[in-house]
Image (cartoon, rainbow, N blue to C red; front, side, top):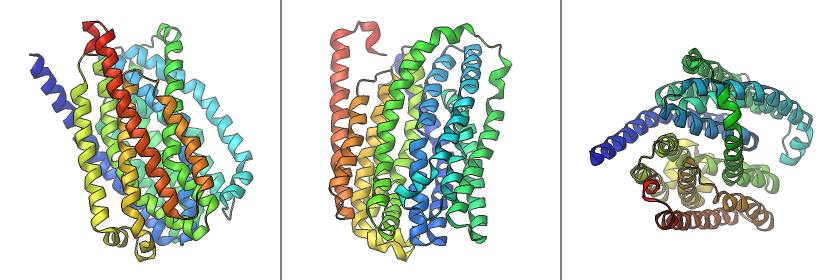
Length: 431
């Protein structure tokens, strides 16, 4: 019977992965096409400005990522016990608190717009102002997406993602035709997110039909805050991992070289975005299984296999056909980055496994590894600040740091399991 249940859960994981992969794959295509459109419609310098602002937005969205992961984990645990009244209370509590935070954050960064323009060497302040406006709804949008992920409503998540990406792409093309340049690209991103946020309310409205259990909030806050802090530190590290290089290249290199590196980043990070879909499915499923004291090692194994197949396939394609990939996706003006493509892709392969293992640990409330992930970001900043004679140096730094981080997490995984087997009672070993 136990074997049957394990096979059933593995099948559910694969089914959910396929559902989300199909939906998110289409979303990824639209988002990727967005980069291709701006890469072709804008000049190299403008393309570099857009990509650097997108990376900056990812850093500013760190609290939103924290909210999504926290809400995902707690909604998955509440789903396991069918406690929808507590879920209602949690979402309502976060909505009220984060609305005021959103307004304050938006005003703060608007005040800093001119300083940011100077640091990133961007020609106009208006794209920066436009890129900050989504902060008003970003955190509330993160709550809704986290709730849907925790409930494992991957179909609804995929539909919302398609709407968000589709609206963004439509307006980016429209604004490009109207010659709005970088401001138009950032405006398209803003409008896509706004529409997606509005649609997400419809997808979670059934939660509010259950009576809110306010007693849950008082008892859960201490545990929630502790976990949220760990997730926030993790996301600081992982997001800086994924975006700091672009920002520093924009700062240290010429506008043209920054544009070339942006193209390289767009091509390489398709590995991370593609494999991130698998991680998104794994996280709530392991959280729910852990809450119900069920085994979940098979879920991790399936995720590792899928991430490995996807990432290795893309790395191999880039290694064998770099010129064809660049010509097909971005055009001949970016062929100069061909020799670097396979090495950047290799860094993204390591990064994908770092993300996978990290979220596996977090889904079980294991957080001590976070401090290493957080430590790597200042090391990356220092290394690129000291060694930036060429793009090759930057990519070498990424490969070294991401390889070391992956090795550390593998060591942590085996050490953690050894501690569990030696120290925990039999009833806890399968958690």
